[in-house]
Every structure is written in C-alpha cells, then in structure tokens.
Length: 332
Figure (cartoon, rainbow, N blue to C red):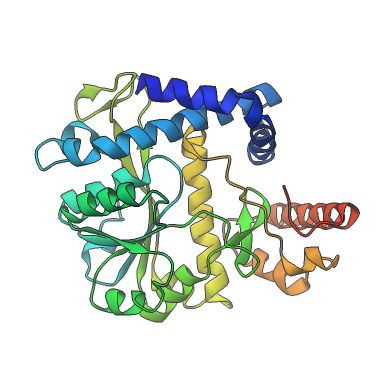
C-alpha cells in the first residue's frame, strides 16, 4: 500500500502529466474554493495516490472481505432511518461515485447477503476483467456490461434484484444537466427513468477510506491497510419525487447532490482527473441565456436557496461566454 501511494504520487507529479494535473487542480479550486492553488494541487496528487491504492485493494478484496474477516476491515456510519429502504422489499437501485472504494461497497453488500447486479465498464485487459468477474460472482455480485445492458435491467429490477451504479461520470451531450458544485453537469437519465418506471428506492452510499487515527468497532485505523466505513448519504423514495412538477429532473438532481456530499466528505478520495464538466447544455453551446424553464426547475430543488440558483445561472452565463469566445463546444 505504501508503494502504491508512492507510485500514484510519482505518476501524478510526472512532467508528462502536468497538463492533466493542472486541469484537475482548477476543478478542485472551482468546487472547493477554500483551497489555494498549492492545496488544490496537493489534493489532486492525493487522489492519484488513492487511485493506485484502490487498484491494490481490488486485488486483496476477495481474500480480506470474507465471511469471518470483513468486520476487521469495514465499519458502518449512521444508517438511522435508512435501512428500511433496503429491507422493505421494494425494488432497489444503489448509487455511488468514484469516491472512496466502490468495489469495497458492492463486495461488502454481497458478503452480508445482499446479492447485487452492478452495471460495470469492462476492463480493457481481458484476463483481468475475467478475474474480476469470477471473484465477484463467487459472492453473488454479478457484473453487467454497461454496453447493451439497458434491455436487461427492467427484468432484473422487477424480479427484485438490487442494481448498483457508479453514477458520477459525465453523461455526454444527451445527459440531463443538473447542478454539481454550482455548475450544470451532464448526468445520466437512465437511473431516474428506471426508478420512476419501477417505483424503486434509490440508496446513495459510499465506502470511505478511514483516515489514520480514526476509530471504529473498537480498533484504531493505522496508516495503511484495508480500512473503510460505509455510509448511506441519502435515500430517495417514490413519494419524494412523484408530486414534483418534473420528477426526472428532481430525482436526477437529488442523486447528483448526494454525490457532491460524498466528495465533500472525502475530497482526497475523489478522482478529480475525470472531466466532470466537459459536456455543456444546449443553451450554452448555442450562445443563449439560461432558459426560464430551467431556472424554475432549479428553484424547485429544496436544498438550493435563491442565491444558489442565481449563482448557478451566473456560472452558466460565464461558461456560455467562454465557449463562444474560444469557439468551443466543451470545457477542458
């Protein structure tokens, strides 16, 4: 683990990676403005350390997270008022982001007796991809190829099988644009459409690597090793969105807001190298102001104040002007 962290930092700090780190540093400074440039760059390098540690942990998960040993490596945060969404028998979607270790989250659920199907991007190295699928399947965690899985998901949901998604990546030009750290962000529609069609609960959770000195289950976390805490960040139920003027926008915005809270809880464990704001909404690319209908949808989100809505719209105007001035259709 020490070697993985050192390798990740060395890769992040390498000269050939300078432009990528600089862009990621600017993303940190936008999302977390209390960081100065040096602090933001350090956070980016920490995320490279985290990524390499996750890669090592994935190899050890099948051996360490077994029936007897998982409790030595995984603790739990407060689940008050949340577990009924898992146990009540209603169809279930479980969401997380590329923050913490998404593999620990899914594997722990399977070890605890909640077999899941997880939508998964196949690894480019076929032998490694086959190993990951095989070891996960032994615990009841089935990986679904994200390419072409759409027709299969409705049947699985109706049969009562929980479906997991890593849902924070850029969804492209056809995504639904909702706020993320104060900027409109392309977000997957599919999750919201499935939830609405099948009246599922949507559980947003994360597995956060515990920091040295933290205590859980009577033991103190050391500097290295597999030590995680699982938290349920939000639970979205059908009654939360069914009365909304635009249920899909509300549901998508709320789960994106939960993803933001995950990142805020552990910013050093988020993959800032992802181009999360790359795709832009149609009005920005067409050099048009924020549509009044979108402004009203933003005002309907309970967690946003009027000042928040205005700040999002002002940022959209700045992004629109930047695209027009640079002759671009995407952000760096």
